[in-house]
Length: 113
Length: 112
Image (cartoon, rainbow over all chains, first blue to last red; front, top):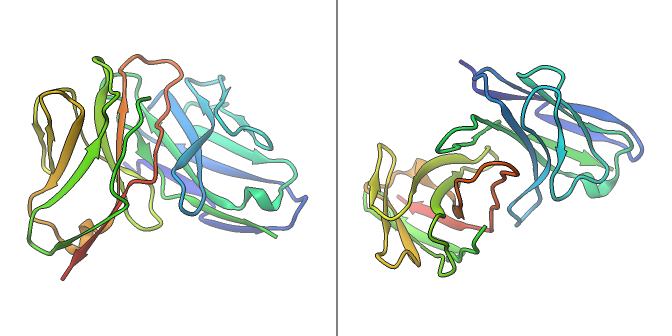
């Protein structure tokens, strides 16, 4: 049982390049979230999914797209990376039942130059 | 989510109890108090949650005041591995547009 895994762990992009971050969970959770964390700040929700085939916008969705084609995977895409997207990205998953405990992945550190 | 206030940093000697306070004076009757922590560069980790009764698990204890306006997370025998940023969050158990609102937390440093 690996829990929540994220790929890659580190990445450096040039402005305008695209990439996809992969989040995978083996706990059969319905809900999956993507957060970003910037220095000195808490986590901010980018996009989330409440089940296979569904996605919704969080509080900072601009510049990102997501897909949830399989229940265990949640992809975060950057179509045209910008320096403002330099951040640490965390994925989380949880079951839609009390106490809604969220399980986080180890994070992806992305630098856009 | 109700707003929470935590001290920005605290130190605690190794082996002693670490007591981390959190103020949540605007908490609503159906909102729970959750605690998470984030060890350097890792994803946040759930610790404990409670409504109005004191709670204890293998990681920590949670003491909530009778008026529910504040709470204290207690790590009974702090170790160096407990050095982390601790986040206090309040939220209601109504599910839908669920997200965790993390503030800046308390940076706890365990001193050898």
